[in-house]
Length: 282
Image (cartoon, rainbow, N blue to C red; front, top):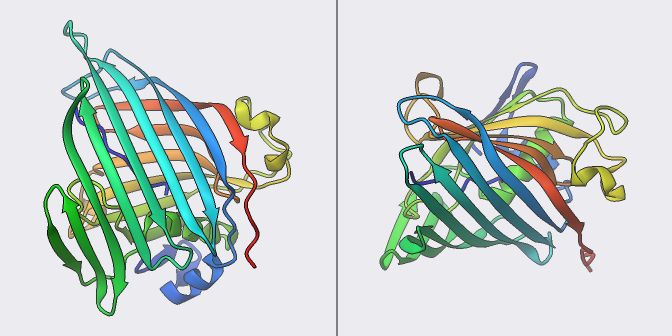
């Protein structure tokens, strides 16, 4: 079983209350500040279903995010999961990814490695840049190659900022085309974010590491589910390749993860959270 790194990390935004254009949401997203932080999530099996059931999962996610609009945003991500299908042999999945995205969301650098049972299965290395007709990509791994996409798409950090902007504006659904350099670096995803009712700071107090962090005590958060679909098919007519559910604070911190791989669902409880200082822009 190959797990997938999802961005948590836009052409059209649609909601139950109206439609907003890309420029409008982009302008709102410019006012969204993301907090530098390091979070650890402990993973376990939440649900097993389908033709390939899973009997047990345990693991951990490390999410280390730093940056600002003037310096750009850097992410170090690692997800280690031990998967037991109940057939007598457990497998160890180790996903590692680093990205850098400039503050204006014009450039993205990415590097990822996928290990299975401590053996490297695949690696992706490259950079993407906005061009007149969409996005241009230069890859060095898995091979030297240039790829172009003639579509209005967003990068991962920009995607998160747009979702927060949409949530603040009372939107309940949000569609975006996302490029994050995952898979072979040659893939776009159609995504649908469903945004739930805002949770006020004094409601539904967290019972994980977020509870002890004073920087979150006065912030609103929203339950969000982002579904990722293969590009080019009608979103309403296909099953998501992957989906992630979480509570998203207005500074970009996420808690209460649910990672849905189709045949099984993994929960992620935040066990550690360290808020970091962010240098103000000149």
